[in-house]
Image (cartoon, rainbow, N blue to C red; front, side, top):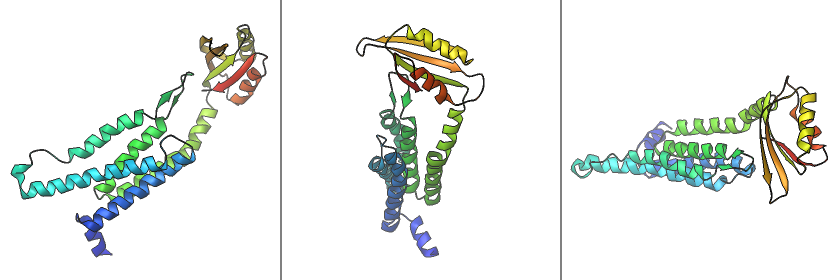
Length: 233
């Protein structure tokens, strides 16, 4: 076992294969969770990002060996390749982030996961096996366990944003009346008309006097005659 670990420390065929295999495994594990939630960047995307990132430190290691043999031929630092991967991942991650017409930002978690998968790949390619494995476990904990904690915090928040779609502008008075009866303070409101869909859209920032289920208010607003859709942002 000790001899095998020493073999992995060297830059040889076995260590290269193990590094690529670890990159595929870690990227795939992260991607499975995203694929399960039907995100744009899923299983294969994360594997490709992780494998591509793993290639850069190995290429840098190879160039360093060449520079050691003939330093006069290599003036640049080949380890900068890994830094360029981290920078470049920002462009790919930006492609997964969208802002809806309701001012919702979606895709941030997927973008962060891709960026992290790239760094995990760099770690695997550099031979930092334990670091890559631990980082993958932490990503899974964040996605599977901490996400439930986040949902709980959001559900118990006293200040929320609500999107309301309705057809009659007079309905806004009824909506405000429902909120005031419950003692809910309207901190901010943004009203816009959509001629294309023949509807009026409102984004309301609400502050609750105490903690209680947001669904109760949403259902009460939804029960109004001309309201077509209510959604917490």
